[in-house]
Amino acid sequence: MAPLRFALPNKGSLSAPAAQMLAEAGYRVHRSGRELIVADPSNDVQFFFLRPRDIAVYVGEGSLDVGITGRDLLLDSTVSAKEILPLGFGRASFYFASRPGGISDQAGLSGKRIATSYPNLVQHHLSEQGIEAKLVRLDGAVETAVELGVADAIADVVETGVTLKTSGLETFGKPILKSEAVLIQGDTVEGTPSAVRSVEILHRRLQGVLIARRYVILDFDCPASAQEEAFELVPGIESPTVSPLAREGWVAVRSLVPRDDAPFIMDELWRVGARAILVSSLDTCRI
Ligand SMILES: Nc1ncnc2c1ncn2[C@@H]1O[C@H](COP(=O)(O)OP(=O)(O)OP(=O)(O)O)[C@@H](O)[C@H]1O
Ligand SMILES: O=P(O)(O)OC[C@H]1O[C@H](OP(=O)(O)OP(=O)(O)O)[C@H](O)[C@@H]1O
Ligand SMILES: [Mg+2]
Image (cartoon, rainbow, N blue to C red; front, top):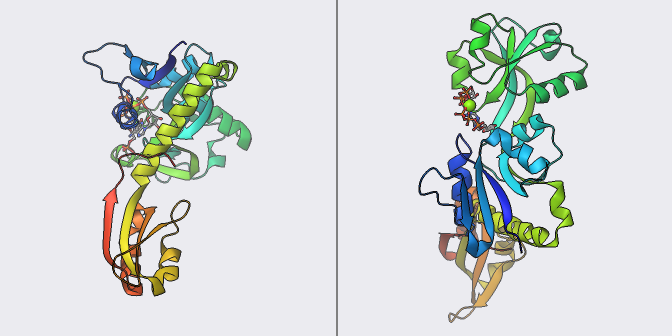
């Protein structure tokens, strides 16, 4: 059976979190030096470390089976690889921006020069809106293009907004796109049963990591008379687990709850009579 050929970002914002997530999912992605190909024989996977922008190209044309890249980079590549799982990191929005008091809405871009590193993504959006503008394709640091007179506006990734602010620019209009890291799959996978199986396992493992990051385990003891009220607070992903307690008239309950909601749910559980309320983290899971 041929190993699954998996493209990973070799540098940039997505690189470390992608490797971390795969390690949590049980893959061995460790690079001891600067090698560009790493084998993980126990999982029958071969990792190829590539520029994030190139990953969609390799996966799209079938040289590699799957990869992790940004949704914005996938769309800009215009290849037919498909997004099969959003991964919850590398989140950023894609906006137009110009000088304050300059262009203030997307219609105002008509006939203007727009600097971007994502020309296909931007052109597609402009065509959808029926706007004709001239794109100036740059490799990076596009915020400087307005100051240097190369463009009237830019279209770029905004994470914290600090780069825009320090360049004297501000966004206008709605975001063109909300992006995050995504798992992508090439068209050739579907014709190869062993690759389909490997991708199913990969998908389930990564979903396990995502759930472990988003949920915590909540354990508590509850008077049986209050259990219905408690269950409404902790429906779990499928259903809470209930076990008898040695103490007459009480039950022990275990459920998964969203990490961010846990403090509020604990307050409410206490109010309905639950006690010994414990929260613990999941390492990973299969649900
Ligand atoms: N602050 C950020 N800057 C740039 N890209 C970001 C940021 N946060 C998330 N991303 C996402 O990372 C991907 C771009 O990664 P890429 O490695 O090409 O650029 P980078 O992180 O800016 O690295 P570099 O420019 O140093 O090569 C895109 O999907 C983008 O949406
Ligand atoms: O909203 P922020 O948190 O400021 O992040 C967004 C900025 O970061 C990236 O640039 P990067 O530093 O990667 O330089 P580059 O443009 O040369 O890629 C991106 O292109 C934006 O300029
Ligand atoms: Mg960059």
